[in-house]
Image (cartoon, rainbow, N blue to C red; front, side, top):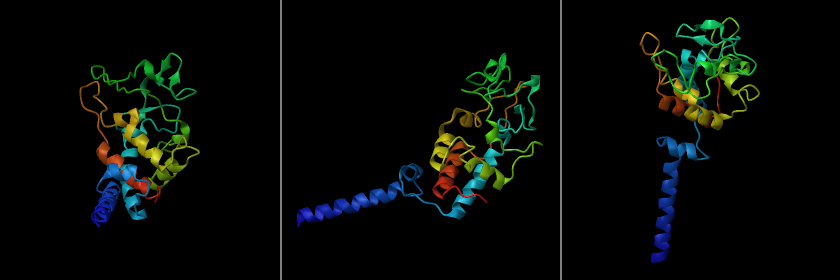
Amino acid sequence: MRFAGAALLFVCLAALGGARAASPNNPQGAAAGNDARATRSEGLAAWQQMYSVLSHPRCMNCHTAGDYPEQGDDRHVHRFHVVRGPVNFGVPGLNCATCHQRANADSAGVPGAPGWHLAPLSMAWQDLDGRIFDSAALCRAITDRDKNGGLDGPATVKHHANAALVLWAWAPGRRADGSARTVPPISHEQFVTATRTWSAAGTPCP
């Protein structure tokens, strides 16, 4: 009887531990669990948080629909006639890495991060007149796996959590006049949590 009682206690504790691992109050556990779920309404609310970041100039300046990157919070055309080139890294003699190194160069006001480049045209988040996609259109754009590099929901979570150029948006350095560049309206942690919830809800769009 003692053995049976101990075994029952072990099973109960194991079940409790599993429930904690999948709890929405434990994001790491929820991310690891395969059965974590979120409702559509929770997913749509999370998407609106994501949209506040994706539509910010730190993201939009590289997700352009034209042949050039943009600069500044006003998203003006990049100076010096910089263009995307055949593979989104600029053209010979004027590729992105000529100026944009692996880290911000605050003394010169030049931002930098590993692998600096434009997003491909398939990942443009604005129209040809430079107008940012509305929430529904941008959601459709990033969930189209024929255009987004084949990313599903979990892969999008990993991208938003770890990609160097995504992380740069929250540490964008300073302009040449010494003023700090603006950052997205929510923290990176909140952005990743929102992406995880959106993914768990099945990546719903408005």
